[in-house]
Amino acid sequence: MHRRILSAALALSTLVFLTAARQKPATDPAFRQINSIVKTLSDISSLSEKHPVPYGRMSKRQLRQFLTKRIKRTLKPEEIHADELALKMFGLVPQEFDLKKSTIDLLTEQAAAFYDYDQKKLVLLAGSPLEDETTTLAHELSHALADQHFDLQRFMEETPSNDDENLAHTAVVEGQASWLMIAYQLKQEGKPPVPSREMLKSVGDASEESMAGYPVLKASPLYIQRSLLFPYSEGSLFFDAVFRKMGNQAFSAVFTDAPVDSAQIIHPDRYFRHVKPARPDLPKLALKNSTSEITQGSVGEFDHEILLTQYAGAAAAAALAPHLRGGRFRILGTGKDHKPVLQYVSEWDSAQDANSFFTHYKGILKRKWRRCDPAIDNGSMFAGTGDNGYFVSRLRDRTVSSVEGIGNVGDWRRLEEIPAGELAVPAAAR
Image (cartoon, rainbow, N blue to C red; front, top):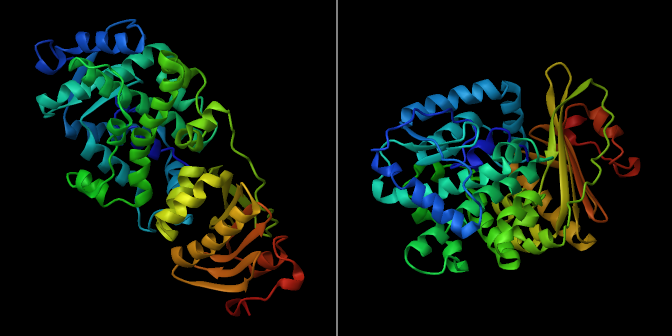
């Protein structure tokens, strides 16, 4: 799923578009510990500090202003619209959802500290409780240490080849820092600096209790909530698995041989075996009206897990999402008004898994729209009309495909996805 603006929210404490804050004097008590914290982190990770880390503070009001200006400067309105449209067409957020405003609200609500890997500066938000800042600083300075060795800006912005890989890279950055943060705490207590699985499972806690103090996050759609928490919760467990296999080499390996999708984060054995996602062919289209591509990207295990959780329940998601091999989507704008048409395809481990997902996907279509009027509903095809126009969803062996939003019944009839002998025109089109 596309994440141009959402990627900013995926890394709350690694904020790429935060402009440089004014340097604070060393008398600020929160910053007096920087040198000792960095030394401890260096000892734990074997990553040397190449130069001191600049630092500063800013207010929540200043943060909101910087976020707004940075988004305006770096993202075109059509790019933000494309991200929002993709989420809406999959049914992952409500039709009235405002992605730009939600992203800014979430970042402003939760922000406590940032390592800005654009300006290479550590920034703490004014008013952060001093008693919490040692832990916060350890997390952010872990980013600074990694940045000095692996150029986090390039790692986060330039190297990912698709959306799901972008999420995996964010999980590397946040997962390693979360692991090091707990290791730092343990070392300060005189204990071996190796977090237990139980300690790591508390990172990114998504419980109602943990979100009580964050009303904007609590009120956000499930996909937004989980997108924010995934890099911390699953990322820290992923890094722990790599560390237990490689030792301190893990601190370099996760950057130099980075995971390529969310499945490798969720299932570290796939990372060790270098299992890459499949790229199934999108369903074919031959529309009469002129078309232009609005956006396209990958749909990984994380995306399918949330989609299934939202519409079929957590048990179905846990049972089926791990069997995804890969997914893709494209949104085309058709006609003068650029009416969006969604092309989607996913490939599964087996025909049985694909059949199970196809059954669930029919339910997703029925629930994400206010109106779903099927003209064909059998074991391999589900087609008819929905809120956006005509749709065709198809099961073929290990793949499930869907075309949604066709505005012209002639185009719908001519789709290769529909064998002529099976076509019954919906009542609405007669």
